[in-house]
Length: 70
Image (cartoon, one colour):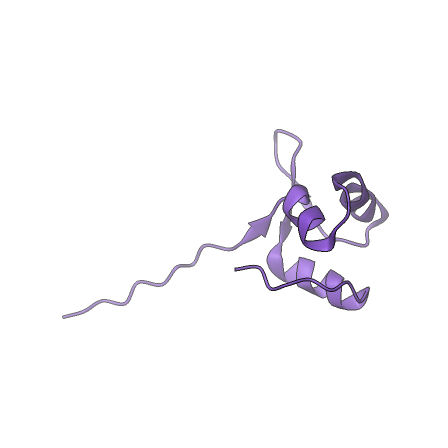
């Protein structure tokens, strides 16, 4: 009997990854987060993580061309 295994891992992006996809600096991404334009959460070590769906919604809202993250 075969069992299907589902990957329930939710994908999160770093500020650096988003900066590369948008062609901007990490500082710009941090400003977007600080202004509340881009939804993120902070890890205990101080790094930010952004859910991939939040990133795509942000990019669509502000007409930022990005290629799909795989």
